Image (tube, rainbow, N blue to C red; front, side, top):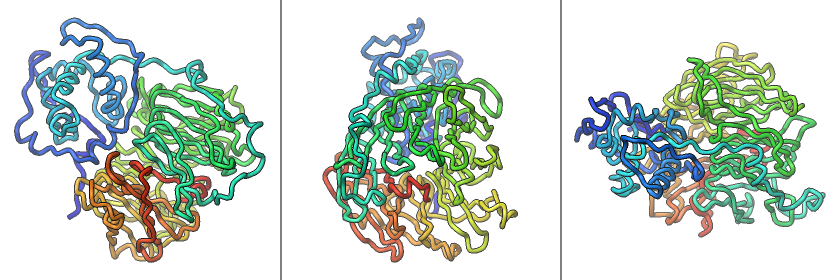
Length: 582
């Protein structure tokens, strides 16, 4: 049975229908028993909040009369819980982001009792049941309800001085090798995120053996590879970047920096003549991006993204940097700004006199990737059910394309449709569909920038879709689906005959792991395009694994197990990542 995820807590919001203001600031109706019973929180629904980390230790506390008192210890604990669990959806300043606003004007109308019940029980609109799930103790539930009645403390800014204070060059450029010092096939090396241990694993694509475990920031979000293929950049959600030299006898971190308090994106310059020269990273807090030296991570330029939204043209204090890609047509980085809906073409030819072309797209931008030519960038505005298409050669918006509910493409999937020509595909968090968008305006002008076909997959809760230029398969994961059977398997379509539907591959079962939900996430191809790797992602105290599938036969080829593989999630093949192959 195909199911749309209509209550994903990745939006973690109070629905307008659930918010009924009381006559006084501290009294409101409780949620009905029916409301409580309807809501069930799954591990997938807690995915987004549980990965957000920002301690905010130095944020200023605003004392107020007329609200429940919190002592310093209680306030500090509540602040930490909010940044870890709530800020990613509701925003650091509680102005609303993917989730609804939780300003004191709203929370004080709702009242303490109402807030306590909703934090405890959740709601059908997607608010997780933090109390009844066991994630919060009863005391923490009460504490957080009180905390929301206080004005939110604003964490400190993190400017060039603070960033430079975290910057460290561990191995100077002069002390690094002038040629590769190891026998590794770097093009077929995988950088694998070990989310909860704060590490990455470098795994050899041929032997399937772990080459090295490297310490990183918390919950590495992505890995990116320099144009030369020598340097690996990883960024944690705590905004720490590691620069890893893959040429050394053993791949080694040669520089580190922290560009803010919370972040998601990093990229390196790829334009011909500018290879490896610069790196850029964007942060959630403070809302800004930082341009760095590509060989040392020395911070050069810090630019705020605060500004007006594209629709109502109102000021937003916390527009976070979502995804970043490197243009192949100009010496530019393509920077997407989530809450304002702007796409910035940041030209790095002259950083002192920085030129930025601003493209108005759609609000709530998230992730995306290039079409097969590398000219057009397609990025999801997932809260608006839209894909924005940008021409990186002409630096202009091509079209806003409506898709299914909450598109989440990762970098998307490019292939040639047997009827409609080149297409780029996205799956969805909020429903079971896979949208195929035409990408060839020259030979297929009628299909270009339109959804030419919508496939029906296993269900909602998809995070990543994948194929390869040498493959005839289209793979779709569903790790956030509330049904364990769907979360632990993937759907695969035959590109030459999409109408026949999908085959279910039970990756979790193939892993041989019997405990946990065994969420299967993020297919990644090897360099040759004849293997696809999936993470079997369990809790930190449970066994996880990586399952390797023969792409041609769709049969099990290998299972990688190791006690050091703690919560593996994202995997990034060096060759494919370097060359934007997806």
